[in-house]
Length: 250
Image (tube, rainbow, N blue to C red; front, side, top):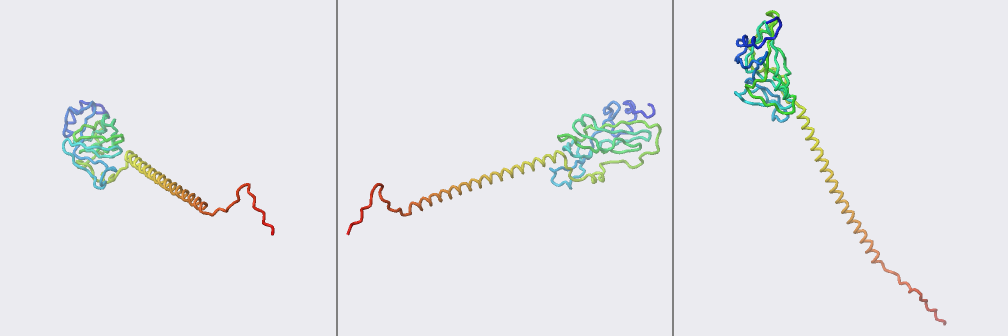
């Protein structure tokens, strides 16, 4: 193994039993090791959540499934406890088959020398559909690379276990996704369209009533004029071609 090189599958087989708990040889994938989804998860609330302020980290039973809706953010914990020796550094990512569904790793991409504990992946569903994940599902990858020497600049803290509540607090609250905003815009557009149609129907109704009232008024007016002229007395006019008798002579 040369200076600064990535560990091969053979080196992983030799060294990882003391660095990853639990370790399974069949999880070695070429020059990487596959990590599984662990016992805790946090998924950001969306517009369908009854009370977004109550959403927090939740425990998962063995094999329990959950979903990450489109446009939503999540913290995923590894099942395994990972150690990085002082003479190495590790790099982490998500398996391609899961990436193709739209799940993007937005957290750090490396693990410092001296780190020990479970890993927390911050992910975002950039796809158009919900992503279904189950506890124990192998979706993460980790690579180890050798440093040129054992370093004193390393992590020297306690084991990291569980999802950091402070990290959750910093991103808590409803996250407006593109899918959610699109749905709200469509609902508003439909509501506005329904109101416009209702106003048009109402205007048509009142136009009809107005036309009917006007027709009745015109009919009454015509009848009144006819009745008025019919009731007026006519003068007696002489018959055509007749002459009045001459006055008598005294």
